[in-house]
Structure formats: structure tokens, C-alpha cells
Image (cartoon, rainbow, N blue to C red):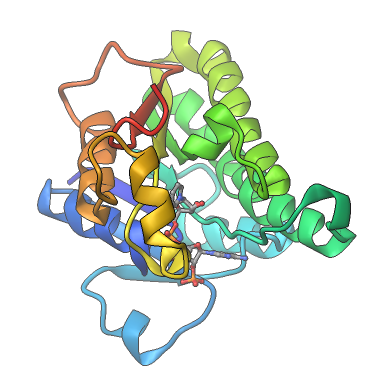
Length: 231
Ligand code: NDP
């Protein structure tokens, strides 16, 4: 059975991705920072670590997959926002967002690449954002981190393509989750041509496509799931 690792796979968009890949036939391992009654009851294997803890992430992955073992698919979904105007942004808001959203990609994906290279197969999918494609006022830290992921995906796709590893990103627009719960919907909706927020399942469908058998000639790409927010 093919295996998928979903980093940040226990709630929100990540949970929908775990559920969808599971339905697609993958044996899913979902990560979360800590065990709670909710995470413990999920019908997947769980790994618990903080993506900002480089050594902790590496140790958890080594313990799960062994020295050279790797999943067939890794999805890097963990991410946070700490919005505010750049002129007033403190260092903590900058650091925590960059460390979680971008450094976490290094901490969780880099340890798996050698194994994928030696197997000559693998899929890496990063969850970026429309903010990383177009930039969003009030989100300079977040936009930088998500644009960084796009750059990383494109460069990594070039490095590992000849070993049969596909590396892509999805870039959601505004999706109905805890992260967007406090947005002023009446001001946001007019910016979205489809005039609605996206669902977590709609993002998971795009990830499913990039993880599955219908996308074997697609690498280094950014698949936007945004209702037309960024065109
Ligand atoms: P949620 O706030 O619902 O979920 C955030 C996810 O990130 C959780 O799985 C959480 O894991 C994980 N996470 C956060 N910090 C850490 C950490 N330090 N270590 C490990 N995991 C961490 O957000 P969404 O589901 O909305 O967002 C998921 C992804 O999609 C994010 O990368 C986000 O930037 C991106 N995105 C979301 C959009 C939206 O409109 N909602 C739009 C565009 C992109 P846990 O709490 O279980 O430890």
C-alpha cells in the first residue's frame, strides 16, 4: 500500500487532506503537535512533533521510517498567521511565522529527500497560499513565508526531477477554517469571483490530484485553489 505523510494533518485543511488521501487508498500518517482526545481518535497513524523543532522533527521521522525509509508522498501543510502591518510588526510575529511555515518545510521534508532519491520515486506537495503568489497587505510575514515555499518547491523540483521525484505546491485562497473564521466576510467576498470561501475538501482534491496517478508529468507547479482570487 502506498504511504502518505501529512505534516499538520490532524485538523483544518490538513485533516481533509489526510481523509482524502486515505480514501484514495494511501496508508496515511498525520502529524500534530500534541496528542488530544480529538487527534487520538482520528483513524490514521499519528506522529507528534513541533515542526519548528528541527531535531525533534528529524528524530520523529527517523523513528517512524527508519534510517532510509520514506513515505511515497509527503504533504507539508503546517502553517500559522500572525497578521499586522509591517511597520508595526514585532520580531516574534516575523520569526514565528517564518519558522513554522518555511523552516518547518526544511525540518520535515529535507530528512526524507535522500531516501526518495535512492528509491527514485516520491511526491512532495507544499501547501502555500494565494498570499504567497500575490502578496497580501497585513501579511508581509505570511506572504514571505508562503512565497518562500513556492521558491523552494520550484528549485527542489529542478534538483530531484531526474530521479523521478515530483515537487509541487497548492495555493489556496480563502478557505473556511479556524484560520479565516474572524475575517470580515462582507469585505472579503467581493474580491473572490466565485463569491464564496473554498472548502477544505476542495483543497484536498487538488492535493489528491498531485499525489495521484493523473499528475505524473507535473512538477515545479503551483496549483491555485482560490475561486479566482488570484488569476
Ligand atoms: P489551521 O489553523 O486550522 O491548522 C493549522 C495547521 O498547522 C494544523 O494542522 C497545526 O497542527 C499545524 N501547525 C501549526 N503550527 C505548527 C507547529 N509549530 N508544528 C506543527 N504543526 C503546526 O489552518 P488551516 O487548516 O486553515 O491551514 C492549513 C494550511 O493551509 C496552512 O499552511 C495555511 O497557511 C494554509 N492556507 C490556509 C488558507 C485558509 O484560508 N484557511 C488559505 C491559504 C493557505 P496542530 O495544531 O494539530 O499541531
